[in-house]
Image (cartoon, rainbow over all chains, first blue to last red):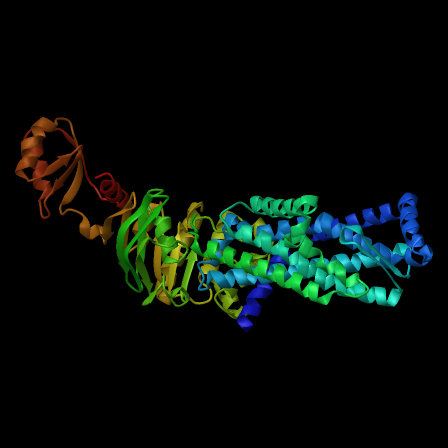
Length: 281
Length: 292
């Protein structure tokens, strides 16, 4: 087991020593600042204020850093999170195969399953690290501009509307981050699956994003309302439910079990495909 | 050390390797030769469990690569034609990452190997600034870590300058002499193979056309190049001496008194301006085998 962690250390070092990793983190900060700029526009603030005041609450109490952080999180993750995770996970195996490092690795007495497990764990750690980074920077940026105050949660697609004081709001926000990461693991698993097949890294990324966007688009077609819960992105939205006044834990556990089953299936299929491949120059 | 037992492989219905059987003894330097596409890389891939054979099996140190890969490759190192590294990391870090897939390696052992391949001064530089020769040395270092008994070298001298080729050759010979390493190598530099290898195997279009000590397989006789003005007049003299001619090279049976033959040629009125012994090189041998 200790050798596994030693190898995992190497895997993570490779991942986090790449400049591109930090360019991506930087890109998130830029997008967060951009969204913050938009949220601070008078027109946008007016419409948020109108929604809050329509429920009888004082808008000035809830137009806070925490509210801005939640909105940044909600939008930036879907804007960039999926793209970036697809890029990183799509690269994990196929890039090393393309560049020849995989042959060097596979000349060692290590099983292919072990190599893939290491990469899958590294991808999962990366997903959690990325979400933690987005969550913390979004909160920092929000607090910097909006200051402390209550949390206003408004996610029309999820039919979610809630207001919290700062303390409980912060707790919900903190609880949402690992759940969001858990949801995004499915993007990483998809990217990882395609990366295990015999294709270029760019193709793995494009296919991952295609699946994600097609799923998002088709899910929103009214014709499919009856089977909406069977779409990946519908299940992935389960993290938002942590902001419900009464958190539907049972439904959330079901969604996450569903996603974990999808992830496990993708990893097993990826492993089977990888195991059958021939690697030669 | 290595037994290749009737392995075959086809890619998309095209046979890349016809049944191949080979043995490499411990402590031997064995050369695998062949043109591009002859099946060398496929063979190496199968030896390392990177390519699944359609039939047959490979045994390294008594363990089957196909059935017990971890045990079979436990003391094996390999380098490939174009070694690939994480360019943004240092050579040292690359060594650490690759060797971790085998096990933990003490830094002292890593330093020892780095010194052996002559990379001590640059080992902490990023690999992206390494020259081709330095990358080859780093590849060799990773193959020698942690402690192999058998190394597979696919074109180890590819792209090296003459000094680099000589250094690589001396290093391989030293590894065999000092560490009793068994080496299986492929190279298109036949003079290198000639100087390094005890035995060779030649693949041609996926078929084994020769395996063994190539000098032992040479036809007997003394070969000389004769610079003669009139081959018609020389013919009977050469025939009497039981010589066989191919262009200007004549092969006489071992023990032939060449001075007597030359004297006879001169007596017969043949103008003979040069008599030069011909050494058959591995290149001659290889070309003769693949063009048969």
